[in-house]
Amino acid sequence: MAYPRLSKIGWMDNFSKLNLIAECSSSRILLIGDSLISGLSRYESVWKTYFFKRNTLNCGFRGDRCLNVLWRAKFMVLPQSVKHIIIHCGTNDLNNSTPVNIANILIEIGVTLKQRLPNSFIIITGLLPRDLNFSSKRSSIERVNFILKDECVKNGFSFVIPDNEWVTNGVLNQRLYYDDWLHLSEKGNMKFSESMISAINASTSKTKSETKLYSEINNFNGKQYNIKHFPSLSSSISCPSVSVPRQLYSSVVAHVTRPVVLSVVPHVVMSTVVQPVTSCSQNVLYVNADVVPISVATVAKSLKFCPAMLML
Image (cartoon, rainbow, N blue to C red; front, side, top):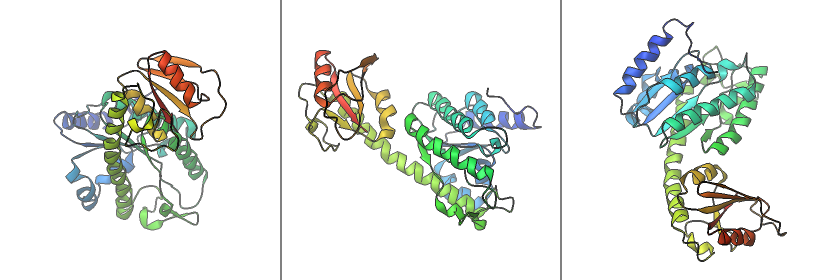
């Protein structure tokens, strides 16, 4: 259960002050998390280079655990101007929580913020390695990131995995950390910031592609089942299909405004015709993953649905 850090002197005061700032903010980027997020504004050169000109609001609180961040995500004031939300926390939970629980709460934070700001793009950064040499905490971090990668895909979030430069031959890159082997030096903050900006830039490009995809799906007349109706998409087969990256699945479902059939199938089309198992949810008809293309088209036609198979 999410909770505020009432035992921490000044925590609620800082929360209230941040809300006052957010009420009159026109920020486009919101950073939320623990001390590693808070630390991004420690060095003036880092903040000015990566975040100041991009109109960023830093909502990082030192020492926060995931449930503290979740509580803030539920009750903080959110500027309606925000387009990108970057989430990073979890390292403070390693002593008293499991990797699965940490990852699940991080996803819940993302879902909460997405519900409150539906037009925002959620980016979750993987936990950074810590401890000078390999440790049980480092092992837990790897597990958290492994889980997060898959869960972010399922929820339509972007996931930033720490690259190999943070650790060399099992030892932390000492140029990137303070000697507590947890918090980041100026160079570490620069590297961390660069990964976030890269994710933001990638999401901006992705959003343009998604908009075109949604338009094509919603405008498809459903009379002729041919891939030519989706010119911006590529497919190796000639069947009624829409080929989209796996991470777009949730987004596509959320943006469909007219009846379509969405069938989650392997990229290699099944050769055996099986009876489709279907269920309806608003404008979306889900079809069993083993149904071959022609079956999807037949089911769609009989129910007057527009066929659109998702190739994952």
